[in-house]
Length: 247
Image (cartoon, rainbow, N blue to C red; front, top):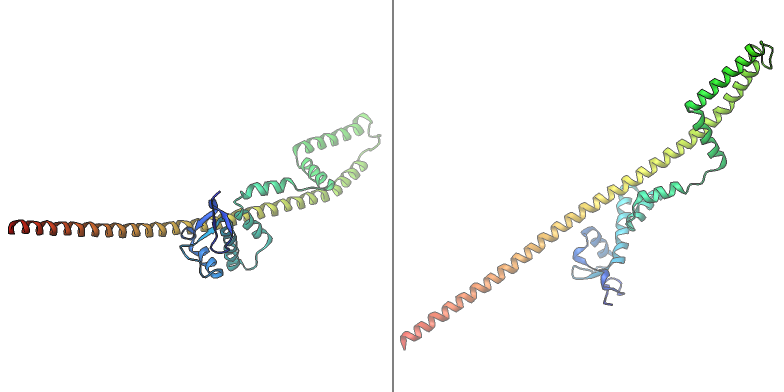
């Protein structure tokens, strides 16, 4: 396997990881030169070492605009460094969230209590209760009019339902906060990738312009050589003609 020696660390790496300094963006290249002043456009660096400096560049970019990095921003940087899709990680994290039995029960009760199924069943229960006591038992049943027992049941149900709904709302707020955090991370990663893409395009344009300029200079030098050769050939031919005429 072919290898090369990195110009910044002196370590040996596979040839496949070799990156020329000409291909490094100026912002990252400047950061490398700050640590290694002798590094220039003729040098080479390993891909793993370049990834390290890219990570430092992202962190410095965040620090300049936001100050100290938070845990969320560091997670974005780690995903950007490893070229992972952030949405897959967020979906995996949301699936791995462990809820307590009380939280799952509160969600189910709130889901059932806020549905038409609950309203229809509860209205049918009240109608059957009233009809049973008033008509079938002739208002002498276990809960005659004005249905004191029914009012007690309704009051207890309302008293228990309110904290359950509040617990479910707290769970929904947690979900909203997590969703907002996920949106922030995705937008932050997208913004950073757009900036990096702009730098790459600018660097590519500058590199292409420099290559075209070098090519034009090489072509111009070649044309000058051809013209000089043509002139030398003409002068030699003229000298031969003069010699022939003199002879």
